[in-house]
Image 1 (cartoon, rainbow over the protein chains, first blue to last red):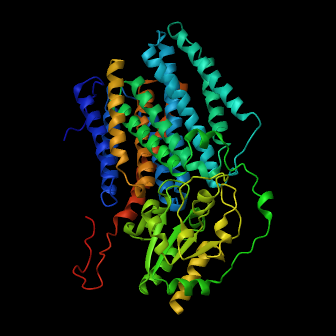
Image 2 (cartoon, chains in turn green, blue):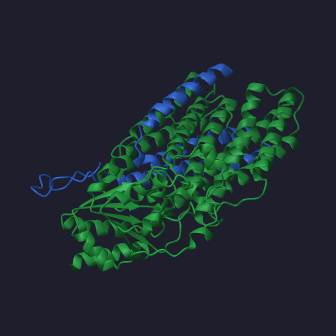
Image 3 (cartoon, each protein chain N blue to C red):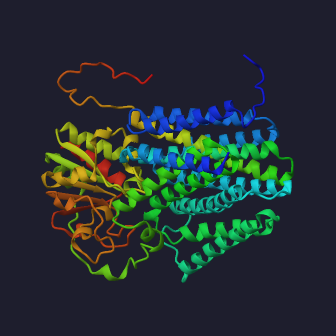
Length: 472
Length: 110
């Protein structure tokens, strides 16, 4: 084959065709992602699209500085490979937040470099390039810093509780207004040498806004924040595509923007809250102690009693939540389910749309433990079956099972659709203590007469129960 | 490219995105997010163009960091998605295997 790829003209039909192939593969890849059995292939198709796009760009006329390009790409590849090999499935939300952040950071840096490029040319910057530059700089920067804060919260480096400063909304509003005003000033100066100092000031203001925007949001709402920031990064990448005249970037960025938007809206619907409410209400700021300290009787049981209840049931529904992820209990839970299935018990898993810290988080964990995806039931599918279920086992889930969402119109989570475990014949809740969930509200389910509490670490409890069932 | 062409591409892509992505089931939302996340790493192209065409140290520095970030985003994103989806692929568990195991070994994926 030809040893050297001829330098390609960026405007040539061949280059454009390569980018078209590339974005078509992205769409095809996502399209294959609609079924668990084809999704892996879809991911490879999308990766092939990326390879084509990168290779085409590297072959463009005039591309030099190979040393720096190699340093950046090899360094990035090493970090990416190591991180993705090491990360545990339970830590996936943090990982996605981090990858999202670096993407946003790259967009903001490219916008800055493009701006400098025009300054160096000493020509007026056309507005149809300058506006996308400003947009991608601001949004990319917000996304970078916001994602880092989300990462910190999920990783436990920063408190998951909403961090509230008085007047924060006002401050954020002022920052945003200031950023917009500065962008307009820069835009007006587009033909007379806009100030780079002001540009950098906006970059920094956007960074501060990204931090302040995510800090007051509680840990339980991080899935919404991450998918929103994902949409932001996507849209800023699309804007970068407009400033660089690159169709692959425009299409890819827009696809990501759509996906982030859809996921954000889907999750907000699942919580029966509006997106602005999630972002600005500082939910979870409610006092967690105080009001609910009255002692109410709970029924506590041992692993052995739980095993008996489960082993003699006909049908069992397992309701996992973030606690299962934290305790790394998915394999132990699967063991327990195996023991039950050996005895002919019908086992299903009920997955609430916002269980965990990411949409579909529970599905990934259970898939890791080899639970067949057919056994994972969505909320709407499982709720009608709850009254015929003998035992519902709640493992590390809390707010998504709280009957107050249905019964108490004053509850902060009123109207949020829940997995109706209180409709089952009996309920076993595996939990370390009676402490409230991220929403910071007491769960009436724990005090219900049907409910038995098994106070233990989720992994330990599931392993104990599995052993007890085996010994019966 | 005229701005209006680019906006046309943007709008059409948004519709395609909404159509395709609304069909992804909840089960696969985490891998979907992770995969689309990897796709926006395509901003790497911007970094390549910046570094490839510049020769001033600050632009080189900014661009190299952008390339570094973009590559993490792409490589890490696709690999981690692949790992996750590998766990889904394995087992379309034969539902009625108690009566007679017709297939000895479920076919390994090629």
